[in-house]
Length: 191
Image (cartoon, rainbow, N blue to C red; front, side, top):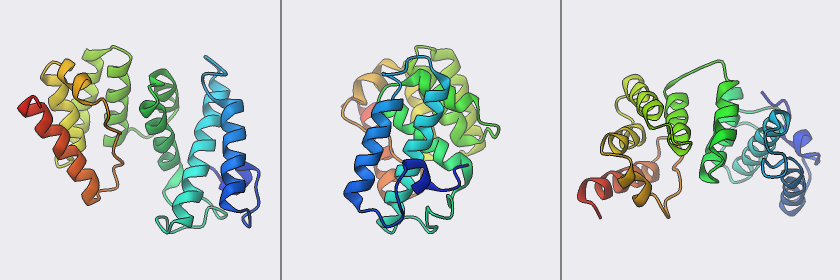
């Protein structure tokens, strides 16, 4: 868990949005997986940097309830999940698995993200197993079901239809459900 998101980025809570963005970019450039291939310490630091930046921005946009100065509102795993999603969206699947492998709690979101990362690494059987476990744990989550259905349908369709999609966040919002439904219908209809 990150105690202070501002401290992680090396800025004051009074910093402007531009100052925060500049500090984030400087740290991201230094600790990015492309600049530090295979370096687990750098991957962990990058996850912390991403989580801190996301938490500050969410708070400033009114989307988070806790001030990042006092810690993360969603607990330690929320920031790690954000980092994992960022790695997956940027096709850094090994880095995503490195963060996931260090997490103690394995809930439905963990299995979903691990399934997605394993698929990206080419481990289709493991991806299918993890996606199935995520759906077992949370059968009403359309995002999890969408991944499982895509993998069951051969996966290739999934890869072809996800170009241009970004991975939705699992905050239970209307937008996320619509993205998941759109993905699901594209897979079913072959659009």
